[in-house]
Amino acid sequence: MYYQIKTTTGITATEMLHVAGASIDGWGARYAGLFSALLGRIPYPQLPLPCFMLKDITELPAVLGL
Image (cartoon, rainbow, N blue to C red; front, top):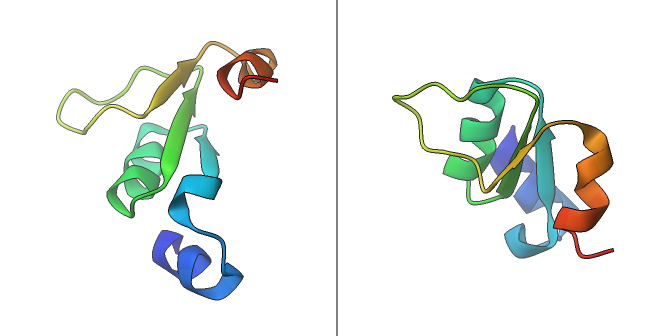
């Protein structure tokens, strides 16, 4: 699904940020080349870390530099 988003929207991977509620979703987005943030979860140790770890969604503007 993450590869399909890249190919159907015309948006580059560097223009997207996937905010995941589950570690496996954050890993899937990152594996497909998207920036990923993991919201309020502890990542599985065997999966790559997401680009950003967020305690809650209110931290997102700071991560995006807004």
